[in-house]
Length: 604
Image 1 (cartoon, rainbow, N blue to C red):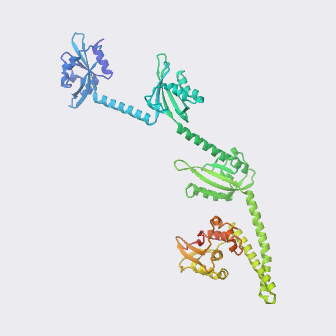
Image 2 (image 1 turned 180 degrees about the vertical axis):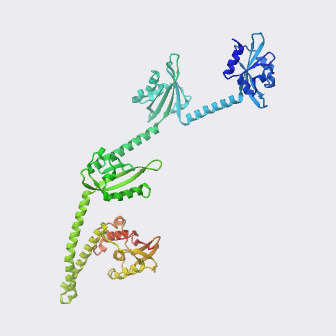
Image 3 (image 1 turned 45 degrees about the vertical axis):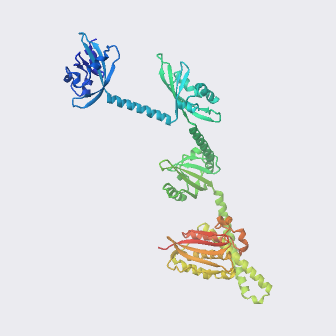
């Protein structure tokens, strides 16, 4: 073959090649070589190689190799480009004899800096890969199907708790530790790859710890790395990782999901998962039974379709506040339409679930059927109303007659006067009881009307103290009027304010120590005015504190101190305060001070 053609072929292949004559002058040069030195090919023809590549001829001559021998690396030499830039190159030289019998030299030149950079990059990648494998705790192994032998990495041995220098058959040790039920699962990826079904396969299986105290979950990924000339896999490589923690998390999540599904679908109250647009995503059997739909029928509807029109605005308002983050959940009573058009009452509780970005994802709704409860409440209210009104009219006449008889009591004997006093006292108690029941019914139904006006709060407190001075004689206590805060003007209903103060003063007087003082205060509290009533007495027992404002509640340990009462006074007081836009509470120490306080809105 013509050597000139060979040199051109090397040049086209991208090799930087120079051909020197027996005087080390350039007689041919490939285009990549000219580009490496930054010159035109014609510029170097006929010139000594030492002009741009300081190569010692003795060193080149010392190789004295033939063309059929591997090229020898002469050295790394600092050459100079046409623009006088230093260039470190690696040179391989081959001595050979040309067709005319001359001794020629072929130089293969490479940019040493690029080679070093590539070597460093490759080394860095290898280091990073090794660190990644070590950091990820991945055990690597190779399987040779020809010899049925396995070679494993140190991390693989570590996973099986085998010391790096410990001598043992790791393949046999691994097989003995795999769970008996998982042996076929663990070996299947190798079979799939060897039989040509796939290039890659994976499996998950249980592996005993070395001391046989517990099971670990492992994952193995296997791939074909090499094939024989006939195409059969000759080498498999694999990676093994410990997935015990992931499996534990998956198991815990699976249990949690099953618990949720069981609690959701088997609950005795109606439950639904609702989309932000109102569509029902899921509904349980209890809700389907309550509304008379199958689950597929119910999930094809929106809650807006199921809600009575008169109750929809309140629901949508609460829903808007929930989505905007103003509230964390809400509860309300509303009416629903059954599939047959009938109306059922439900007590609805709604919570919001947000996605990872904080956006509303779905609502969780619970609905309790209170239709029967509402019906019974209506019957009870009607009964109480009828009984109270039927008692109030004749009772008023009886009390009027008793008052006339008491006015002219001198004509009666002491025994008759005593009976008149008892009748009048019990009649008054019955009258107060009826009034409390009627008030409680109206406040609970929010049927009581309020006439809110601007009024000096301290003056209202003083008026109430004067109207209730009889309590001071009855319970041997004294009232202390509030400090002068006449500038504090509140938005109140004077009549209902007096009712609140009368209930608190009566309650404080009943449980005050004889000879003590019941103090009242009026003070600013931000945008409100705070009114307090304080006594010194036995205090409120811890067991009763949660029930203080509940209707018909009385502390058993203090019942001997009370002179009658319905247990409705504080409950009515709480409803009046809240319906006037205020708050109410108390603080009590056993055998010490007890303070009941409430707020009214401050007038602008």
